[in-house]
Amino acid sequence: MTKFLRSAMRVFTIVMLLISLAGCWDNRPVDERDLVFTLGLENGTPTMPLKMIFQFPTPPALIKYAAHSGISKMTPVADVSGLGRSVAQCFNDGQSQVSRDLYLGQIQLVEVSSQLKPQVMRHALISLTRIGTMDMTPFIFVTTEPLDLVMKAKTDQDQFPTLYYSALFSCKHCQTDNLGVKLWQFMEDAVTPGVDPHLPDVIVEPAKQQISVDQVALYRHFQFVTVLSPLETQDFGLLEGLANKVSLYLPRGHISLRSIHGNANLRTSVNHGIIHAVFRINLTSTLADTGQVIVTPAQNAQIATEASQQLANSCLSLLKYTQRMDLDPWGVGRMLSWQHPRTFAKFKHWHQEYPKVVMTVQVHLHVYRLGNIK
Image 1 (cartoon, rainbow, N blue to C red):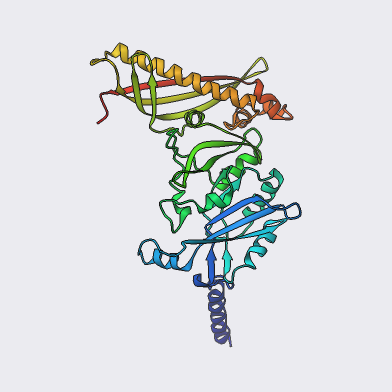
Image 2 (cartoon, one colour):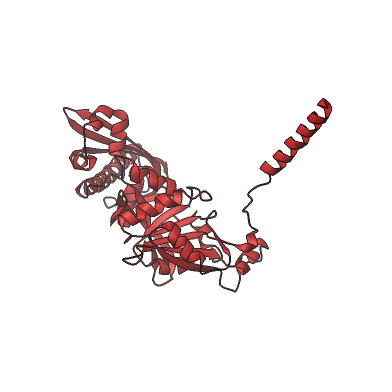
């Protein structure tokens, strides 16, 4: 009898393991699903305040992509929109318009309208983070243009436009890389005291009907506030340590510097009740052009000093602008809460204190190579 019980227990254990490791019971074949790659969020109607646009590759595009046969001549993507008071209602509305299962586990990009109301945006993004099949890694951007226009714009990969966005967030005019923001990064900054979130601002170039990312949009929590110019975005990249291959021209001596890049760090201090924030930016660059054939070490040092001062003044101007706008995208308050928690705890509203912070920018630029562009 004991031997029989042992055999029965072994069989029972094996059966239970097979059941538990069998995967999701509600899993469906990929050919029965519409894999949503891009998700758009914008204002709906007064009674249905949220509108969601679900964009997914068409079956011919998926087949062509899987077979590495190039771009399909048929429509590469399709989209449906849903209205509702919540993400769930919008999803149900969109699902009712397609025969396949709308699957949100493959979302790579979330597009947000700058006109989206803060409360609607907050509730929508929080609801998205609670979807079990969706992670927090999709890129997210904002646009001041209609979402339909942006989502239809051509990219280098017409089959799957969202795949291009992983390398898209490189500002060609402001020469700042890594402007991309993940969903989890935006949500973290939006709900953390002492820091305001930012998003890359996407526009469509009218002449080419192509996507362009040359600016950064600043938010106060979930409220869209303003958009920085390409030059201000360049300074933003320097202050955040995101700049790469920045160029600078010094009128005196017709001097050009290229490949300016480096890192930045922020430190806070409290002196006699006054908060000080110091941005230290360490950069290296290449002397690309000068009016002289030979540049002495002393002249090279003078060039570095002048360029450092010019960059410091430009960055300081941007910092003061954000203080006038009552926006802290740098996380000065968050850094203060880490380095001086007792001081930060005294402030009921950090945005009332941020404009009073004494800002200092220290730029150390090293010109490490002489010569011309090859």
